[in-house]
Image (tube, one colour):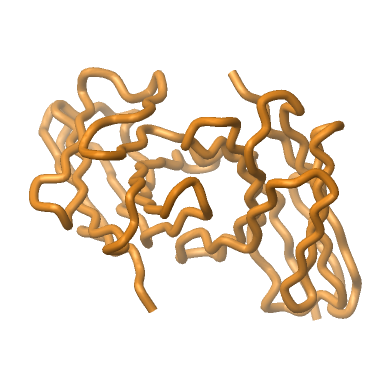
Length: 111
Length: 112
């Protein structure tokens, strides 16, 4: 059974704060690491797909890094806004075409 | 923008009844998936489908479950005899070759 873990489970920040959270995954048999953003009552939306050790990806105020040797990825949000409130899911693919999801980090950005 | 569509959005069914959840994946995608999320729990993989056959399935995907791509556009999940514990949000997703998956809005299944 693959273990993909995310921390923290939930996070409350103030508008304008920068924040980050972690996804850890098996470091063997790695193919890709995905980050998804999931707003309530909507479907998960892909943010990044990363495949190479040391990859860094950026989309607006959100960025992610990948360390496949030690099996972790960080997601950063700079200057959080209320519209960033969502659950952030990471998912690991290890050679097959199945995404194994973490439990998610629920982010709430308050005014 | 192309999207994955799922119908119905809500389904209430009696225990023991069969249900079919429908999905229309993005047209040029080759890989199709079903996931589910039981309330308060994490998103769980059920099955992936490629080239008209199941490529991977989880231990959840037992003989009560089946998938079909009957007409080249729809991708269906059938649960033959529903149990209370099948109540969940069911998400269909599709992707090109091993890239990001695009998810539908989900079908909320309630078994009573």
